[in-house]
Image 1 (cartoon, rainbow, N blue to C red):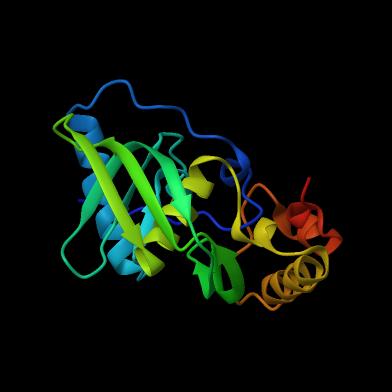
Image 2 (cartoon, helix red, strand yellow):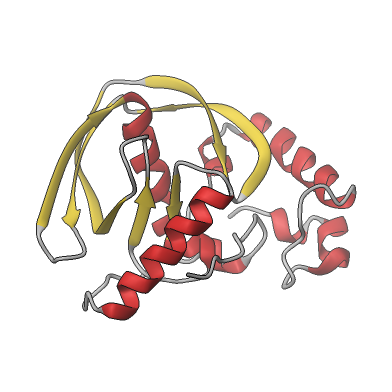
Length: 185
């Protein structure tokens, strides 16, 4: 297995919507194995394919019961509210309190093509919502109000300038200083 580099904020691939998976084959299984290795090395509890530069609609996770994967996931129901301090492997070293639904019902397929239906709450529900955001090209800082987002972008820019957080190659140092790689729609 080979691990991937995790893409960080500012990388254009993180802003693109992932394409649905039509074929579950050996190359997809190898991708999933490599993503699981990358997630553990990070370390993290979840990783979406766009975070490793692959525009496929799938993510891996491990809540302590072994690695899992879901292909073409979709949240079909959600309920409640839960405030939690949320971080992201693509925004390393930072986290923010974000309100999300407390429970979700997720459907999709496993690597054998079987239908999956998962009803989860709290941290696992948050993880599913977070990873689906990645599949939709949405970063967690977009879940912040405008004042918190401005503060977050400044913190990210400061970490990149201090070379604590990597700057995506496509952004380059000049764009980071100008804030071009951190602008939101």
